[in-house]
Amino acid sequence: MKPTPKIALVSCMFALGLYSNAANAQAKKPAPKNPKSATKGTTEAGFTKLPSGLCYKIIKHGTGTRKPAINDHIKMYIHVHVPVAGGDSVMFDSRKMYSSGPVPFPISAPKFKGDPIEGFMKMVEGDSAVFTLPVDTMAAAGNQLLPWMKSGMKIEYDVLLVSVKTDAEDKKEAQESEAKQTAVDDKLLQEYFTKNNIKPLKTASGLYYTLSDPGTGDLVKSGDKASVNYTGKFMDGKPFDSNTDSNFHHMQPFDVEVGKGRVIKGWDEGLMLLKKGAKATFYIPSGLAYGAQERAPIPANSILIFDIAVTDVQTPKKPAEQAMADDKLLQDYFAKNNIKATKTPSGLYYVMTQKGLGPMATPGKHVSMNYTGKTLDGKAFDSNTDPQFKHVQPFSFVLGQGQVIKGWDEGVQLLQLGSRATFYIPSGLAYGERGAGGSIPANAILMFDVEVLGIDK
Image (cartoon, rainbow, N blue to C red; front, side, top):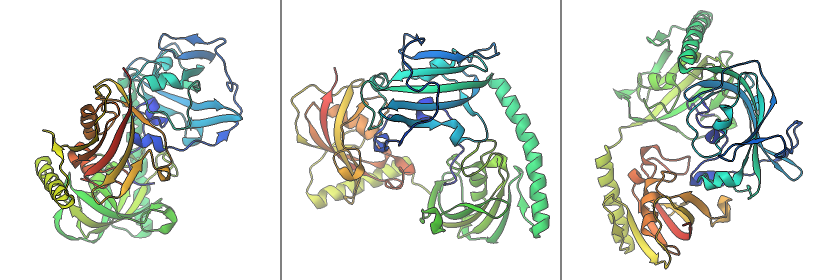
């Protein structure tokens, strides 16, 4: 568990692991399970089918009277599964992931036809319901399916709606709850400091910290990239995560873009109190950590203690400066490897290795591709044709909809059905200063060997 921001179910399909990008194709098939469920193997009998294709059935009526509307906030228990031969493939189960209670969910406009949000708005407090959605509907909306999903399968959602609140009601309740918890946390911290003879400094937000080494140079500022070693502990001293302890299986510095909400609030604030080389301990009240949100193995409303060492600080180049640096690296690469690439106004380079004969790929069309992605040193980080990456099947997406990086959305529009090409994508058209996962560093130039397999009319 890295110190990332608290989880929120901002999109139902996002929370369930169905992403509209290439990374989702690497997901592994869940192990079939056989949970006891009254809805296992449901059919269309007794279901109401909405024009969008979403089917629903109210299993038990609640006593509430208000249905969720757009911008409302709900809390619910939700179990998502796909009936398969021999059992269910469970995709999401809130009771197992969030033992502290129902999960919060903001109601926004449905993102596609059949979005379960449409069904949630048919319920009232206390209702239990079942929703079914064909995976084919998901695919038709441009959502990238998990590799094991087959045409004809249906996703089932078992939902218990616990509460419905307006945005104003939700904010008021959260503020009142946070105020009470802040007082509780501060009392616990004061008692901890007295017991352990610790004399920390306190910030206006309620963050406490001690410095064992001040470091050198300038203070870390918002936008800087800090490389950090850390160990996170509870107040009883039990560690829950560390990148210096092999028991947690990630022994490398943790890079964070400071002040951008990439980490919990206590980290964003605390790191800007430090310099390169500094060593400190943060005592973070729950409101500056994960709050009332459970984040396994961290219970809700947990005070967290982090031992921090800032190993490096980098101030990122401005976009224009980074673009110039990337272009120079690419020009040097082309000269060294005797490559004659064509450059577009955006800074994308490409080489056409096989001209297609079919229609051009245009925005709004579903495109099916084969690809291999490499960094500029030639190291492959992803491929749907190489078995080592465990998703050997065509990758499909809707062109021009932001479902892929900018370099792909632009580059694929240069191709016809049957085309093969290599894209040389500067970092600003790829993952920029954030990078992606552990395989694509910040400000990485990416190369993709691509082939257009299909273009839907």
